[in-house]
Length: 556
Image 1 (cartoon, helix red, strand yellow):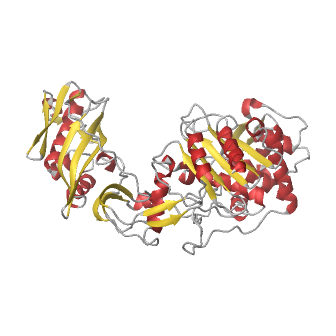
Image 2 (cartoon, rainbow, N blue to C red):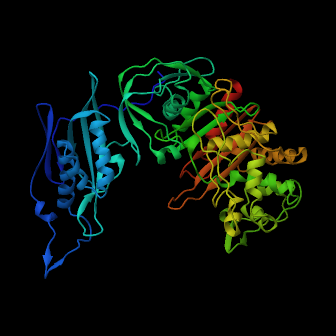
Image 3 (tube, rainbow, N blue to C red):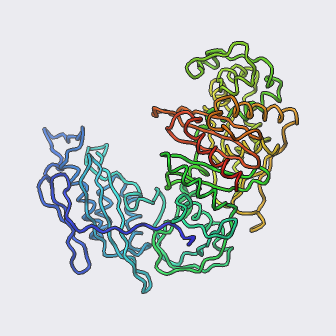
């Protein structure tokens, strides 16, 4: 009902085996007893030889993992905060959070059940009771800890992070039980239907953000709840507070969004077909966001992701090159196999080349060297200014109604500047940003995307300093239309013309075997962009997701 996501309650009654030892929870007078049976404590003692202290090195033994984890969990269960904190590699931070666990979160009767260790990682389940001013509710969740060696002496200790206490905590966050301060909200779609995380799984983080922004403005009344209160680092990352458990319900106020129920449902289905997929659909003429979906629901990559956009960035770069007279859609443009700049050698996919081809042909086939070859004629800040002044990006000033990352196109030099022209280097975007890029091309001007109408709270939307000339805009639309009809986007966009345009992208990421696949496109008064992380080429991965939504949206 527009509430924040809750932690599912799970109960385990059977003893579990921890590295060959039995770990059991025994209830007595409401207090859980954590017991370990076996040997191995002696393995934790530092040995001394010839008057010198030995620093332990090498992989942790099973006995060391068992003993270190048991020392911490037993002390925590008994409420021995100092002893539990001393069993970690950051006693100060651990002590503060564990103290707050009882005093601020009002969690009592804690029982802990360890699972089977996997190397140095030990999973465990937690059961407790939240008790606040006569209100009580049980809480159950799973967490884990990792044992590491202390650098100074090799002593096995728990590697401290706030997530040990609860998996939804980031370092610096707290658990607090009390009157929420922020009333709940009932979020509705553009037709008045209620939006819930149960119905639309991707909207959990969006609903959190809506409550934080509009809870006090929508006329609701706060309830009593256990929640995650974000610290400075989490707030800087634009993470919203999160409700874990309601002890008493508040009265929600209503917030109307721009989401289309049919497109939102379709977006959820489409991203569900791929691992780590995200997509955004919006209306170019207004900036209204019609759908947002992620196949991973712990983080809103679609709005807050910060990923290299690969060749979809060439839409912005092309507008820059055309404006500066360095490229023209139907004029010949170099596309060699490789080109060097700033000490780096840049390649095309499979080292292809286009002999005597036009810039339109290079754009449609996504020729990297056609763009890198122009780097020497550009100033370091040219691409940054283009992104900011024409496309409204990289200024951290969007106000869509929930937290967003508004793209980043930093000023760079040498090889990094050249790489940024093809969406690598330091350039970072997400599907919301790239859907806005396609929308700007379609509408001819930047309209800041929004999820809640600015009339609700009289906020000011971001604007762009200028628009492209008619000649530049016409050529850019021709590039995207040609790519949708005959280029790398043609298969995905088949049958959607003639009022359409698209650009594919593949972004290499260190440590990934496959690149992130990107796709941005428009059709009629719809624009969309998507990414499939570690999925491969954008035309094959994100392309079908985006194209399907553009087709469905045109019918709606």
